[in-house]
Length: 374
Image 1 (cartoon, rainbow, N blue to C red):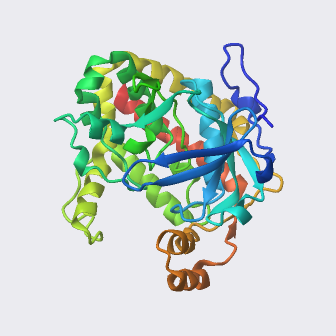
Image 2: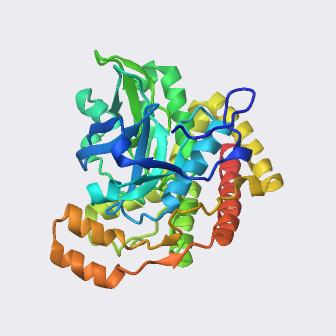
Image 3: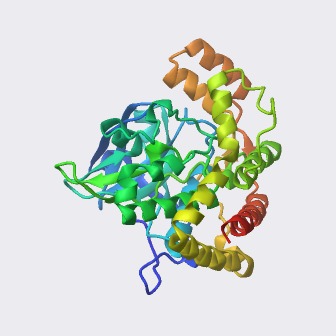
């Protein structure tokens, strides 16, 4: 079953018609599995079921940090907004895959569905793989670590020889970086950006944006204090204020502490670099984001997320610790302890509250970005 879409005359998504009804699948009726090895700091094989029309079911994962059902809502929301206002993006839709959790214990049977982003005979090459294969003195790829809830500096990537020599692809990446800041992506790391290559390995294009789940505005619906803290961290990185001595002293690991200090200012560096080196991209982004801001004010209910029928509506941001212990650490004793501590159902999601927060906070970030980019 294909997700229902409604396009405008220019072929882009119309945000006024976001469909929050989940698509229903049966795992036994899949046409195949997406068997791709995730190459990165955290490697592993993905076996996501594929259905008719090359539609891939992406489940929420029991061990993914801080995951709640709103991770899926974020995918739907941002895929539509990005496609309607900025650049073409694959459309996500909420989905249920019956029988999947029973077969693959580490995944839930709810998540999203979206089309494959490459064609037959093509494959993806992410930035980590690329710079490992083609080292560049400007990119210290060996220092890269994949942390969620961290922002990444892309100035050295854009300075690399490949992007200096391939202006169009560099401009596409610059636009993706600006959009990632807008959506408050706390996990826009080097493995989430990829080239689409042909069978011989030739780079054809930059892959479209996917993986919108770690959007700050959708995180911690069960704990507003944590939600607000990480929104402030997003604002702080965009503003670029210098890190105060001992500001991140609570991070005992020195390498992680240094990464957090870099994360605290790097979004500002990304914005200033793009503003100076890609003025046309910046102008296009500002024009489109201004239209988005206007519509968030004038058509605000068009952007409201809606409670989906038969879709989970409780959030427990700490439940992933159980899955991490069980499926990644293979430690049943620890899993049982976490189950006792965090095994409750969670807190019912207040969609009214989250809609107010999301609409207001996105406008805040737009205005902050506008001040810097103008």
